[in-house]
Image (cartoon, rainbow, N blue to C red; front, side, top):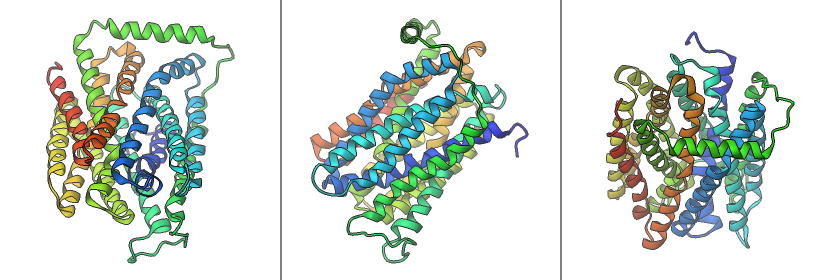
Length: 418
């Protein structure tokens, strides 16, 4: 075990371990498919609607998160912010269990899911901002990689439990709980499990991080003025090299966000996968993503962050194009699993590269820019997927949104000088 690991670092990583269940079960592989296939009743148009909701939630996050972040910076209460928005996520996620097919349940479910998406993004952003508090320049890259890696492991374990306990495997494996499949109670119950899983692994962070809230009141005007000053600093940033990276990373990170948001929908709608097949596919994808996140951390130390990002993006683009062309379900699964190797490294190496490009004494400020630029366009990919899918009635065409964003991001990244 690394010598620098301590309670704060472990609890910080466990937060990723817990919240990853929301990404795996709600956002990508189970509930999103249930929404499109069952609640909405049309996989293609339902996936378009789900993607647009994801984009709107991301837009709301981009508009609100700078003010929330500034408020909790002033109060010195990042942990409190993580707790509040995590509890909102947990409540909204558990509430998704209520919605059954019929009436206006699809619309209500979409709204509640949107609230959970918005809240978890704020919670994750606030937790990410604590990375600087628990790391040094020498170990920040490894800690970031551990966070991504353990997140994939958390998603993997949560998916396996969902398969074994709630859903089963098409007659081969009977679920432990005999829930009513006619009303899709077995699928809906995964939302309650996701909420519990998130809460369980949030507890260590709440215990270990003992942030003291400053007693002073933070005026709303001060928060707004500070955010306005930050925007001015970003627009007038003299380091054009860093600005290029912020633009490039915002674009390719949006491509990854879109891939996570609609990957399960694409597998279900285009290749007609059952819930059980999607779960097995998701488990395999998380295994490969975890392997990639851990192994590329060592590669990052050898060849550098920029080269690691470039290799990851090229792999994502080439394999991604192949998955849009092929029609064989087995070949699609094989290619998608290979694709998983490049997901984690791209994200983890980007955080490290940002720390290398930023002035050492202004890390917090520049990581704020990194979060802000990413969230400010995070709605583009999901909404573009929704528009293309609706317009052409084809998820294959819709998935071009991912390839476009990754490709433009890569092209701009190549201009960044290390």
